[in-house]
Length: 206
Ligand SMILES: N[C@@H](CCC(=O)N[C@@H](CS)C(=O)NCC(=O)O)C(=O)O
Image 1 (cartoon, rainbow, N blue to C red):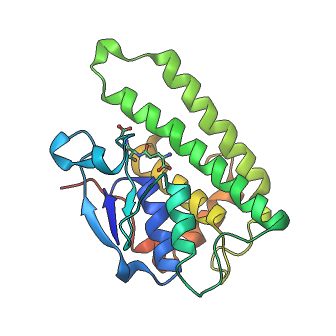
Image 2 (tube, rainbow, N blue to C red):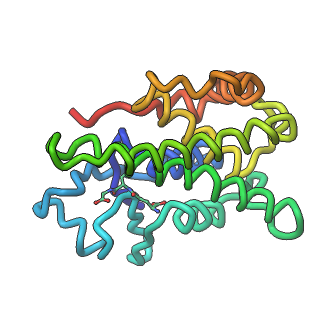
């Protein structure tokens, strides 16, 4: 399988963390992709022009990290990271949605910060910042229910939260998301020790 990839992308990281947890990492060939470079050929794999995109063995191309993660979860025999049904499934999917929402708002902030100075909107940035803050507060409230960060069984919800917090450290360290969120900070400290997280720490493409 090929995965359109950048070492800085938190959505790509979700897929790679899941692949590591599921024992699939060795089957994935990363294809470094600069999203804004037409020569990358990304548009033929994902009409939305985004990474990750997965080119499966049978030739089908999948995109959007929740879709890719669920596809990968169907390829292994370890405990599933997407619970099959019931409350456990909806909790995991809801947590993934909150974490992806933190990422979506943070990526909007990041792109805004890269615009020429006169085109940036402080109001827009504040709006996204407050989305992130409220979502983090919600996660702090349920941090006690996340279980042991080193637990054998985790879900896509834990993975997505871990990748979102890792992205905040990577791009928005000065905002100090840990302030006032001690339970979430403690959980993340433990979760970061997982080999899958350690193997996928974000960095800029060189
Ligand atoms: N919902 C998508 C978001 C993917 C996404 O926004 N990826 C970023 C990289 S971190 C991207 O490709 N940005 C390029 C662009 O928006 O043009 C997912 O979960 O995969």
